[in-house]
Length: 540
Ligand SMILES: Cc1cc2nc3c(=O)[nH]c(=O)nc-3n(C[C@H](O)[C@H](O)[C@H](O)COP(=O)(O)OP(=O)(O)OC[C@H]3O[C@@H](n4cnc5c(N)ncnc54)[C@H](O)[C@@H]3O)c2cc1C
Ligand SMILES: *[C@@H]1O[C@H](CO)[C@@H](O)[C@H](O)[C@H]1NC(C)=O
Ligand SMILES: *[C@@H]1O[C@H](CO)[C@@H](O)[C@H](O)[C@H]1NC(C)=O
Image (cartoon, rainbow, N blue to C red; front, side, top):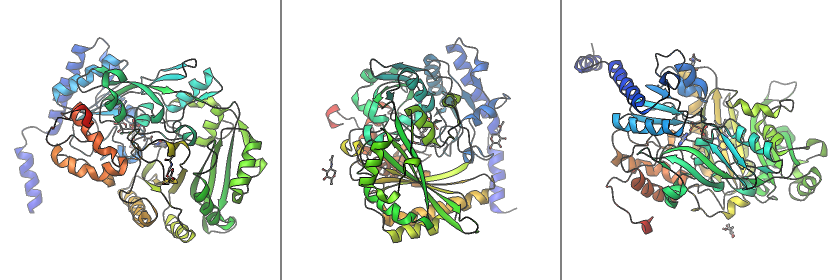
């Protein structure tokens, strides 16, 4: 027996109770505490691993299969509250028992931290999927939406009430309102109206004491922090009040694909110079995927220009002729439709799919993936693009999406909300690699590939700090320390300044004041200051 196996045997013998006994005790105390506080039948809202539906429920919105692999940490229990009081009780019980909470709305977290954990277990998931009400008030120009609703449901309910109103938020329709808005929430109307977080008017959130607070009750500092500071740091968001924005009755969309053989590199070089300066009604992102050259076995890259124009086809043609003729957009490429139909088009649904699909309220396709983000401030030269293609084609499941900035995004000051990627940003890059095979070797190959690409890209993107989007969570950027808050704080500034630039300091101060015991915590939650220094209001 070698040293390590002896040590393991020794540790097992020394352990007072095997871990599962500890688990059961925690589950029981949590269940008991909830029962004393609640009148609802717990079996329908409290699931332990013994419940036959547990895994199904855990899997239901876990978007990244990598994070529910057999060896990924699983919760002690999943609690699916039906009302605000249930959440308040869960917070109070978790605090009393000393168990961590994970909060899940739509389950799209890139590292799965809404349902798994690489920190110390045990933890309970509060899954908000049963809280999905949408209350549209066209006259007031606003909507109250609960955290568990998807943005697809939100868009559908708004369009149902008015053909000329919309909400500026994400492109993927299964995103949960709860996690999405609090991390920023960009989408095809960002160049005209800014982020979802820029359009948040009010909120209901439950704090670490189980109290329910709205904007007035929490104060402007905390309300600032939760509009872009990322989920799971300040409290449980129950619902958001969002601003409705004007959309025309008819919008225009197009998808235009260009391969390397069709001059994709030169066109993309031009796109980098115009995409952030185009008319604010126009949003053209570029989706890049490998493809095969017809009749050969050679791989190439297809760059697809995926666009929303808030207006009719004729005006779009004028703008394109003026600003971006290199793409060669034709009349036949353009499709006029309602804003709600454009939501489906941009999300990639075929035209035959009815808009009611948005009410399905959950993701339709799952795989394992790893992703990263970057912000670009000067165009990448053609030679750089060619080097990117070479690296891109080395992977068997790569995807890149380049997303234009400018317009309203440049006019909102960097400190307006914690999301700091504003004026000076030409576009954001998302890199992604996905796979289906659950083997660890396959995963490692993909993860290595994306890390190498990211290292190579350093020369082309923002530096000091190298910026990243918190809603594209990437644990490679750093993590809070498992053991204690003090070291966490120092480690956190590495990922914190990437996500938030100077706003990170203010986030830490607000967190320290609002949740001094660091009850709401996860791998990349905003840390508290080591010495619980008191700040006066004016310092914040
Ligand atoms: C396929 C796909 C497409 C995407 N497209 C876009 C896009 O177009 N635009 C964009 O901006 N982003 C996009 N994202 C990123 C997305 O905004 C984030 O993943 C977002 O955090 C998802 O929110 P969620 O509620 O679905 O996720 P969850 O996994 O449920 O939560 C994400 C984070 O928020 C916390 N959280 C969840 N609910 C609450 C709550 N009620 N109160 C407080 N904290 C909470 C969790 O702890 C976790 O840290 C995309 C992601 C995916 C996977
Ligand atoms: C849940 O997902 C995991 C990982 O993909 C899978 O192994 C398991 O069979 C799924 N369980 C159920 C009940 O769907
Ligand atoms: C954005 O930055 C540019 C260059 O630094 C500057 O000229 C411009 O005035 C800025 N725009 C806004 C709206 O602040």
